Image 1 (cartoon, rainbow, N blue to C red):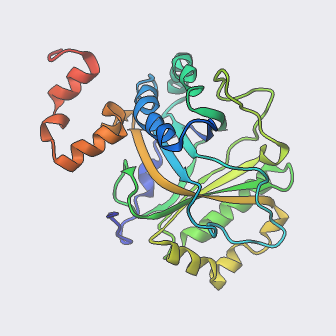
Image 2: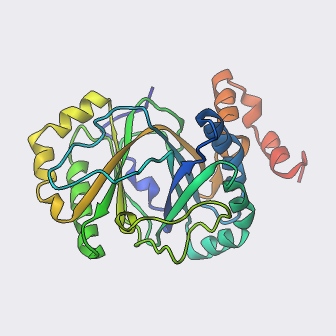
Length: 306
């Protein structure tokens, strides 16, 4: 069960992520979803976690089958056409120097993307992302914590990035004041440039249509889908989104089936060290020996002693 207390807001813990990126991922069509999700969590995840310089690495897995009412229909705003995703990834850094270190070593990671991804698009967030409120006590979730989590992607109506970002920030701040909303994290990336495909992984599509060039992403969490839909039907939500269509042309919600944290504050989590599912097994069976420093050292260095 999620550890929730609305008396304690943990948003401050994310401020160390000075530079961030948000990457959308789409699995290869002939790879079964379970195989894709397992490989991403337990093979690709630990590989990425070990790239030097990395300060923050989180996989958000999406569920295509959950709930047709993730985001309300707002007059004048359409869903993105032909937009299916299997996840969203955050890769962040505590400094520009760390990001350079990571980028120099990334070819070993990018070579793996073609095994599971049909398309990945890395949106740059050189000023980081902003967590406005987060009442979940767990800093490094590894799975489905029972909360109703969604990511909502918005496409700008015009090319005025500053005005679009300001309106999205206003919306996020309004949502963060509501008791029903347990987490609000906002990503306002730079406009994507198809001439500079990112990440440069071979045999993977990195192109976006015009409506997905300038986007914003809101991460939201509620206690349940009922709480979410009750809030979306409220006058407070109607006030928060009033006039949004002047800035937003497209909006699509994605249900989060699990959040998997591999690196936080430049430190490997148990999922980053062992893989997501092995980390879950260690926790479920209470294998205290598996989390001791001698085991960690052996797995990282191949030696029992320094």
